[in-house]
Image (cartoon, rainbow over all chains, first blue to last red; front, top):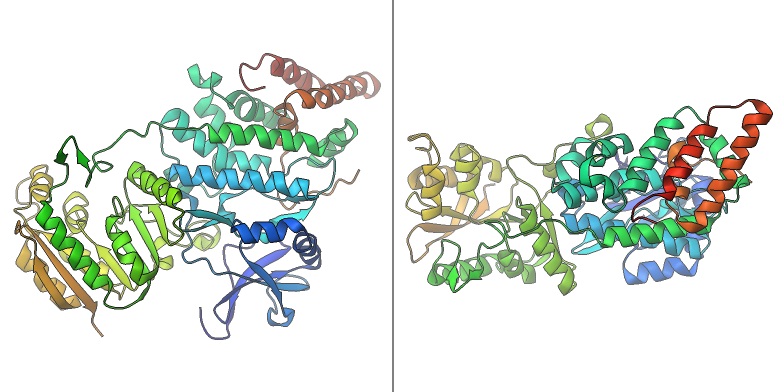
Amino acid sequence: MSGSAVEAEPGSFRDPDGRVFVADGKVRRALSPRGASDWRALSESALFDELVSEGSLVATTEVDSSGAPGILVGEVAAVLEHERIPFISWPYEWTFGMLQDAALLQLSLIERAIAAGLMLKDATPYNVQWRGAQPVFVDVGSFEPLREGEPWAGYRQFCMLYLYPLMLQAYKNVPFQPWLRGSVDGITPAEAAGIFGSGKDKRRKGVFGHVRMHNRLEQRYSETKGREVQKDLGSAGFSTELITNNVRKLQKLVRGFTYEGGTTQWTEYGTVSSGQTVNTYTDADREVKDSFVSRAAARRHRSLVWDIGANDARYSRLALPHADYVVAVDADLQTADRVYQEMKGEGQERILTLTGNVTDPSPSLGWRNLERSSFAERMDPDLILALAVVHHISIAGNVPLAEVVRWLAGFDSSMVIEFPTREDPMVKSLIAAKREGIHDDYDLPAFESVLEECFTVTEREETPSGTRILYEVEPRG
Amino acid sequence: MQTLLAYLDAGSGSMIAQILVGGFAAAGVAIKMYWKKIKNFFGRGDDEAAPATAKVTEASADEPKNS
């Protein structure tokens, strides 16, 4: 990412009129003559300034176009430079509320673009990134001048990557994340018709039109050329107003989606419920842990903190004053969603909430396995918070303890790590669920020996209960 | 009108679906398309799309909540 090398972003190739590349550490976009003319239509509109100043469109300036040889198949007519997004994430790492808010941003951009004589040529959540809890549309290349009478080209994509995944969670209580991870193009109308096409789901809001009728028409017109349909629509008087109608109805539909998000074991973790704390810490433990984490985080300023198993993001918040950006990841979808909603309520722009499981992280996906990079490729922290998480990876995830430590060492980052001993109530209950003897490798001396082999341990503190030990470590060499 | 296609295949069925989910204002366009197909049906013997459009247009009338 540094030096003068020009490398095209492997995920940015679908639209031939523009391609993102990184040069001198800057995120730039090469535009074809048509792409450049679309860009001028956008940048000269009042909408552009409005969107950038409210933060919903990535800040963009035009720069000298000489530095992008060979990036596009044809001529490079203009080069843009974008604001850098602190951490790139993919929709299958987002919570329900995040995909919902990204969908609402996409729809509002279409509505506002139409009012400004513009249109968006696609509708994919991969064009949305995050500044903490604020969604940012990053593809200025999506905007083009509106052509009156043409249908919305991105409608099908909107359904596949936003609408159906949200319906999956809202109507079936099935998380969309594994599906989006399994298919970069999302859920097809035929698949959606299979999911929602029977029983009471048939009558759910939006299913008749956006799923069943959509699917039936797609089957029926599969042999008909798009050009012919477009011509027919045009001569029958299709107007842009119909797109606006559809978009407004979709906004209402998407806004109304909720899901069975009752509290789980983890959403209550750390909170006080009917006078009793529901985690396994004492108040004294918590105090010690808070001050240990704060001290370690304050050691120096960090650019990226990764909070693994962030739960209610308590420690993400403690680290925040000493960091540019914090990525708080939790495997529990509802916990992560609740944290996202909290962050959104606060207008938090420096803590990004994601959902994911370190024992099953996002792989590299799409074309050549390069289109959507793996989580490990994107995550380059200078401080890792691995608090109350090692025992879950090692015991619940069956990863040998030494491998957990070696994996963490691979990030070459400072770290605060917590080791709950075999006497800890949570460890006891995790071990009790397994065959006896299967987690004999999980013990304190073994942990400390591999920790010292992989890191330089600079601080060590036992919590008052004696069952949790905190370490501050630095990478070796 | 221009028939400039996007880099994304909008999908023929998806293009028609979006006018049918567009509510009341869309009905006029759907009916016009329907008439055109009927005329084509008698004029050119093009029997492919006409019954499908007719069926869907009728069906959209009894959509439960979404209009």
